[in-house]
Every structure is written in structure tokens, then in C-alpha cells.
Length: 219
Image (cartoon, rainbow, N blue to C red):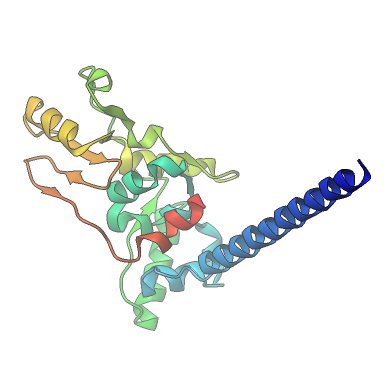
């Protein structure tokens, strides 16, 4: 009985140590991801320069679209596809901030960036038609994400970019829905395909997807 008890104790200790090690590994991976994100790796030169700038106008920049939204892991690929280059668009309080940032980019010859000034954005409402009830529809992209804590104002920018993009589970369902709606819809799938109004579609596999900004946030 004593030997069995000691054996149990040893196994429990081993399991405990294994859990501790797993926790350490996860923590170090998380801190590495945070460092990667702080350096805005994968971002273009211009948006990265603005996000890392310390000029007074920087306080009017809420951040890049990708860092202002929380995306459930299951939807990361779809949302990333829906955003495309807009993941690096910069959300500002107003046009004045965007103007100052553009001047900075010009003076430093750092390239171009796109800005979304919250004060002047006009959001188009999602299309109706009972589309949500169609086979395979997950929902409107803007409703599957939410702004990060303390940056709730960014919801307007999220709606501006995503409120008219529909997320559908599979490419077959997406194609069938696009046909039924005469190719009027912008649709993305959970697997990362994109169907545009008019009938064009894109898909495949991006290199480096596992380290893209939203994928890192989803970890």
C-alpha cells in the first residue's frame, strides 16, 4: 500500500511539473507574440513609422485596424481575408490628425498610408433581404468581431470596413449564394476565399499566415 501511495505521489508530482513547464512555454510564447506585435512586424514602413512615432499628433491615432479588434479564433482567416490591406489602415480621431501624419510621412519620405478619421467616416448599413437565414451564412463580418477594451470608438471604423461583407462557411455555399444574389454581395469564407461583387473570386494560401497580425492576436 505504501509503495502504491508513493508511486501515485511521484506521478502526481511529474504531472504537476509537466503543467508548470507547459505554462512557462505558453507564457514565453505569449510574450514573444506581444513583442512581435509591439514592433508591428509584417506592417508596411509607413504605418509602422506612424504607430511608433512620438510626435504630439500620435495621441490622435487610435491604432491600426488589426490591433483595434478582437477576433474569435475560428473567424481569424475570414476576417483577415475580408480586411486585406485595410488591416494596416490607421484609425484617427479626426482629419486633422490624419493630415499631420501624412505631412510627417511626406517629410520623412516614408511612403503612404491610409487613414480612417472617425469624425468623418460614413458607414453604409448592411444589406437586408433575410440574407442571414441563407444556407451556410455565419454572419456579417462586422458583427463577428468587437473593438478591444477602451477603444470602443473604433467600432465605427470596423463597421465602415466590414458591415457589408458576409462570412459564409464554405466556398460551395458562398458560390451558390453569390449566384442566387446575382453577384451583388462581398463574401468571404472561413477558409479564406473571397467573392467580390461582379463575380470575381480569389483564394489559395498566403505564405506566413501563421505569423500574421490577427493570427498572432488569436493565439
